[in-house]
Image 1 (cartoon, rainbow, N blue to C red):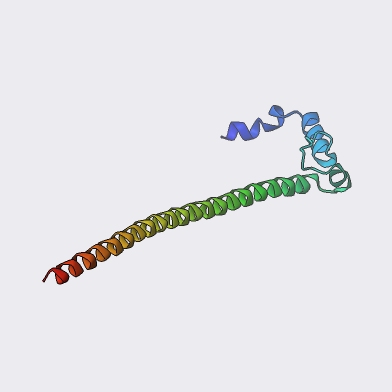
Image 2 (image 1 turned 180 degrees about the horizontal axis):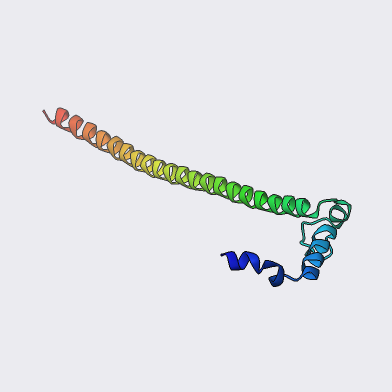
Length: 121
């Protein structure tokens, strides 16, 4: 470990360090992303802070997009469950209507048979 620390000045030449510092301070080598505003980078005195805030904004948008997708998905699942419950209740209602119809017909036939038996006696 001591060798790495003592060899650091030789590992990174001074002019590379100077050019890196110049790029970081001026923003010359900064990659322009779709969300970055060139005016924001030009007018910024601290390019690192600006780039860091832009990266943070992208991450926040991503997290919020995922959260909104999760809420939409939960809502979609709840709606589909309600739709299934409604269709099940409608099917039960149809069966109940058919049962009422059959019971009405059976009661009418029973009354007719009962009146025939009463007349025959």
